[in-house]
Image 1 (tube, rainbow, N blue to C red):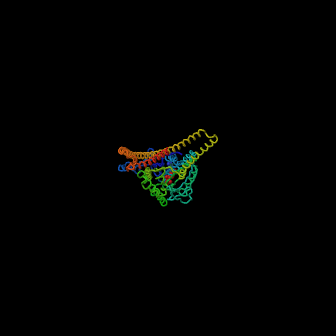
Image 2 (image 1 turned 90 degrees about the vertical axis):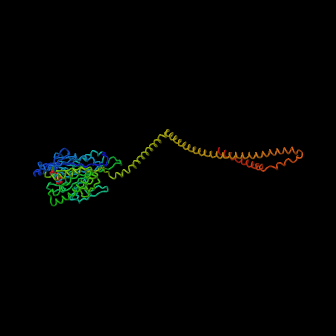
Image 3 (image 1 turned 180 degrees about the vertical axis):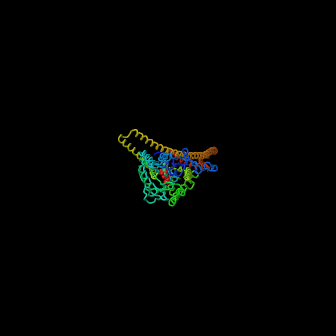
Length: 525
Ligand SMILES: Nc1ncnc2c1ncn2[C@@H]1O[C@H](COP(=O)(O)OP(=O)(O)OP(=O)(O)O)[C@@H](O)[C@H]1O
């Protein structure tokens, strides 16, 4: 699909002006040419009542200069008008953008000529459709298109189906997205421009036409040709979007005021209705052009069928071209002046264009991720199966086995290492605990030794004292003491007896501690 600039994008409404050739009737009425094209974009409208010699009026001259995007005069061919105004919209329409071309101007100024044209000089309808079908043809290898077309008129604020004129009046409906639909309208699906042209000519004959003072076959209604192009890729990729581009081509009824077209009775009532739509259109143009098309300005599109239908074309999602028409004749100075003022104002209107995508594409897009995930999984499984089959045929590749073994042993040794590390840490903790309790036992042992030594010393002191006394008594008593030497033990002091008892206890304690120490050592190592 061709990529167009990033969206949404603000677009200025393109305004072109076409000045038709002066006709015999006008010349017969003595009219002169007062509208002059200057360069490609400028038009000068002279006031026919102005006296060039009247110095007093010179400063209040009603001669007006207007600049448009492009100006055509009587020299311009149908093709030239089409190429400079509408041709560029075709690419957008087949890529999902909306576009609108409407012809504006008073009765007999050349609107139908520009839009429908004649067999020998077809207008914008046919040239657009030709280019549209050619563009479709050129890309139809990759893309699939559905084109449908409807043709309607708005007359006295009712809508008639020009491809089925006997049908009931049609109603406008707004869908959930706010875009306007025409309930029950005939939709023709064809890609043959000639066929469509025949339908249009036939449909145009059904258009409400009456002779007016300004035009013998004046179209009293607004005619709308709507072409819808749906585009989808032929490549069956589910992420593909369906793009819908709508092209409106509108031939408006004459914009002159009822009083000015010298119409009475029925024509007067028509004028009121036509003007209701055109007045609403004018109001919308005014509101939209205010402050450079600021969207904060309230725009009452609902005021008429025409403005409801052109809502997107004027203030919404559409590339829009307005082709204003005037007669160059001096007798239509007033109509030309008001038309130029309207058209000039419309130049400020901005629309915000964005590509139209069908809802269904969003649904599909939601599944796309899932589908591509599944595809990836299928691919993965397929390659796995292929690999397994290959292995079955060839036997396992030694390198794969080695790699697997290597991988397994690496994994095993990693687990083993972790296990050992855990064991080492807990053993270390246990050892530390053991050392701590051994040291405690050691301390206890030392304390027992000290206590034992202290008591031994007490006993040894006593023993020495006793021996000394015994020796002395032996010297003193010599003979008489021969059989009475054992008596000294019975005089042993209390502290010595306690020391003896204590030593017995301490020795028992020491044995217990020694046994514990040995036990701890044994359980530790
Ligand atoms: N550029 C042109 N070159 C030659 N003839 C033209 C041109 N424009 C208009 N005409 C002729 O002028 C006459 C009136 O034009 P047309 O019917 O297109 O006007 P209109 O604006 O559609 O009027 P209405 O609003 O009354 O339908 C027609 O006979 C048409 O062939």
